[in-house]
Amino acid sequence: KLEDYQEGDKNIPFRVLEKTWKGTELAGLEYEQLFPWIKVTEKAFKVVCGDFVTTEDGTGIVHIAPTFGADDAKVGKENDVPGLTVVDKDGNTRPMVDLTGKFFRLEDLDGGFVQNNVNVDLYKEFAGRYVKNEYDQALSADEVTLDIDLSVSLKLRNRAFRIEKFVHSYPHCWRTDKPVLYYPLDSWFIRSTACREKMMELNDTINWKPQSTGTGRFGKWLENLQDWNLSRSRYWGTPLPIWRTEDGREEKCIGSVKELCNEMQKALDAGVMSELPWKDFDLKEYRDLEYGKIDLHRPYVDNIVLVSETGKPMHRELDLIDVWFDSGAMPFAQFFYPHIAEEKFAKVYPADF
Image (tube, rainbow, N blue to C red; front, side, top):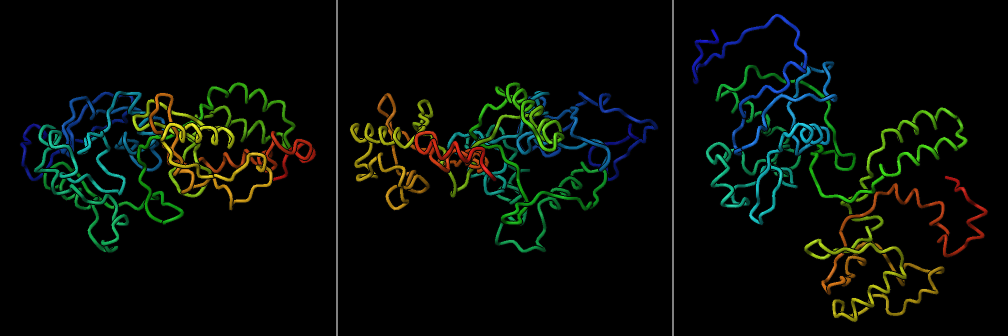
């Protein structure tokens, strides 16, 4: 019987309730932290509702991690459910899994945070473990995976009613064929939502062929438009033309080669740069440029240090720009429009993709 259960009993009693439960009836119920590795003062473990959960592939109840998924982060924010985070030895608040895909090692965490917030006895067994074996080149395919060890831990502590294996789909990177770990990162956005209504009005003036594309696929996309995540953490591509001070309080977005040359001269005069990288470059030659004289890509552009209004050095944000920005700029950028080739541009616009 449920009433006779005591902590440590081998068998966990249960009772089947003969009714169908709506999600709203469960909303607000709280439960115990299954892996109490980190102290959480807020009400982090409670049932909330989310429209992205379905009953087709399960019970209709899923576990969420607000620090590892867009939907989870959104529903967590809406319901004041905090993510589980740690403080590293540099004082930065981070998710429990680092950028290499493993749980933070205890020695990489802030000592005070560990002392006051970490259950070392429970966490040390998993600290430094990769969440997916594919992330660790030293592990073979037949090594015991983390999820198995976590399941064993639940069973040993009488926290698991039943453990079963299920085959299901999981996203993999098309470049590396490794499992994808969704991770919260700082990024640069274009506030597309500020122009949504205007873009919807302009979309109605376009003579779409077929018409259903404009009112259907593209029109629906505009109706549900989100702010554009512009930056990408890659190496090859169009560099993000933003320079910032180390403290992030001052920044400058460069809009042209001419402006960049002017800013480099200011940096040279202020002693921030020792020499100009393009000594023989003449802006008048821009229309006939060859890559041998000027290259605005990495790693060359990363060597340019500008100066802020208060005299501080400014380094370029290392991110690149989404390649779809290049695609959108193609119709005019291929002819250096508008400062060059206006007549040629007028003849070929709109561009033939």
